[in-house]
Structures are given as C-alpha cells and as structure tokens.
Image 1 (cartoon, rainbow, N blue to C red):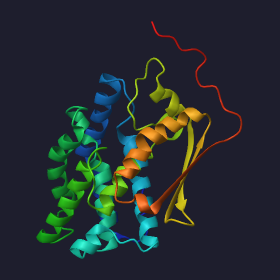
Image 2: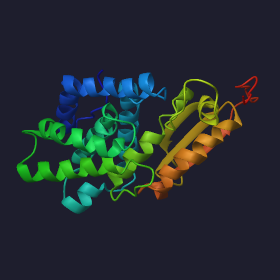
Image 3: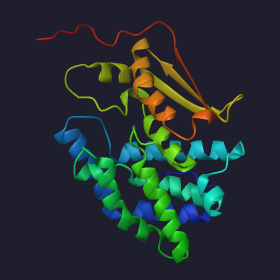
Image 4: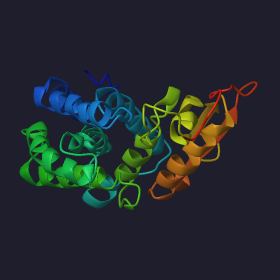
Length: 257
C-alpha cells in the first residue's frame, strides 16, 4: 500500500518513499503484523493502514516544527539537512511496528532486529557510508523510543512517539483493546471523532480533538498525555479537546458476569 506522502521537493525523501512503497518484504511485515495483532490477539490495527496514517502525521508534525524554527536533532547534532530529518522520521514511522510479526510483547525491540537490514537497503546509494550509519542510528533510536516509558533523545524520535498516539480517529486508538466485549479502551476510542493538526498561535503545533462523548478523555489522559510528556516535543505542542453537540451514547448496557 503506497504511503501517499507529500514529498514537497525533497528528492531524498522521494527516493526513500519509492523504495518503501516497492518493498514486498516490508508489505509482508505490515500485513503479518496485523495477523498477530488482529487475528491472533484480537486487538486493534498495527498494520498498513496504521502505518500510512501515522507516517503522514509524523511528517506533518516535523514540518510544523521546522516552520517554527525548531531544528531537528540530526541537523543540530550531525549537521545533516532538514530533508534528511524527514527521511529519518518517515523510515522510523514505516518500520516502528514490524516487530509484531514476532510478538506483541517487546515489539519495539523486536522491530529493531528486523528494521536494521531493511534500513541498509532503503538507504543504499543515497548517502555515503558515514551518513548512512548516522541516519540508521537515528532511525533505530526513534523506533526504540516509541515505547511509552522510554524517553526519546531527539526531536525526530519525539515526533514519531507522538504521531503513533495520534492515530485515534473513529476508534483507531493506540491503546490496544479487545474487539469483543466493551471496555474503557474500546468505548473511549469510539468517542474520538476527529483529530486536526495545525500550526498553533502560542506554540508551533496545535492538536484539536473532537469527541462525541467525554469517555474520550481516557484516550487522551492515558495515552496521548503520557507519550507527549515523555517526548522531546511537549514544549511545542498544545492539545485542546472538546465534545461537539450533545453527548452520544456509546454503550447501552454493561454487565460483569
């Protein structure tokens, strides 16, 4: 499935995306990740649709930061370009969940094992050997740091971490929930109607979230708040959530047997 990313003249990113889109091995990893998540564990999507949504969000977050003169860490620390930071964020987003093909538990670390040789192939011929090594390290750091409890050390990793949490529209919560009986995870996920990301007035990024029911606060408080707090981009992000219209009834009845 093509990522359909806005390249905006970034030739390096364009080549990386072309390789991502044409990789049958990566497509198989995405599909197999959903076999583990949905078919075997009955939790929410971690496959190609999540990757496409999350990668587009991550790229948008990074570009909003750069537009507000927030320099990516690869630029500050390694003297790379903003265009290279975009490639880092997209590669990390595309590869962050492929460890699910092995297991859900510790999938972040498992993703590192599978991602490393893929990164080598996706970067081959684009950079010199030294730059390839730097970019690869930055991508692997962002994959590893998308765990809730791991503190990212780069702007790019913070972007990936927060973007992962923002795939929450129309029940697409990043807190895994069972597809069976209703739980606070599934009910709160269904309450999230719309997530809008735009330039803010007081901070570089404003995230506006529309909910149909106040249960949606659980998603924001237990996932987005924690991932944002444990990221490098918290000072640059404002989050506003509101209920639109009358509260919608999500569950008719709940019982414990």
